[in-house]
Amino acid sequence: MFCSKCGRENKDDANFCQHCGARLGQSITVQVSEKTPRTGRVFWIVGIIAAVLVIFAIVVPFGICLMIGHTLVEETEALEVVNSSMPYDKFGYAEVTGRVRNTGDSEIRSYFIAAKFYDSEDTVIDTGSDFLSYLGPGEQAQFTILCNKKGAVRYELSVGG
Image (cartoon, rainbow, N blue to C red; front, side, top):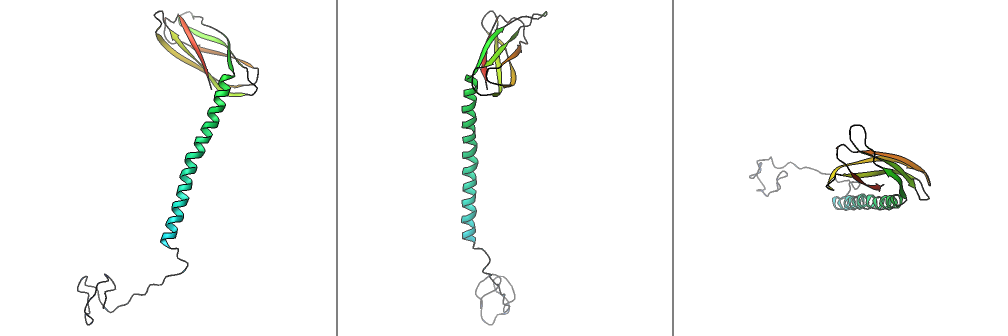
């Protein structure tokens, strides 16, 4: 006789399992419904769904980044600094002011103008930027970038999206 609890074999006339001590002679009936999914099939289905989701989570953002990056490069190339100057305030701090123009055929939703400020020894002493939004084709906008340190004698500008 086999134990219904631990599954080990016992003598046919035993009342208790010699291995786990469970009462013998009691039968346990387990019904298996045909509607119960098979573990192997469920495992494969869940695995395939998980793999598709992982691939989707990697590929879609990468594709979006490529599209956005391509658009930003085009927008940045369409920005042109029309003029700029570096006046000083009454305390001796420099600020760069100027205008930028959209030379492209489409609107630019957001962009920045960045400046590096140099001292007389040609060392970068400060950086700053001005963030602007929406510039239609052919339109111009004004920017101002402040230097937070004294001693700036020259500057360099860069435009980005």
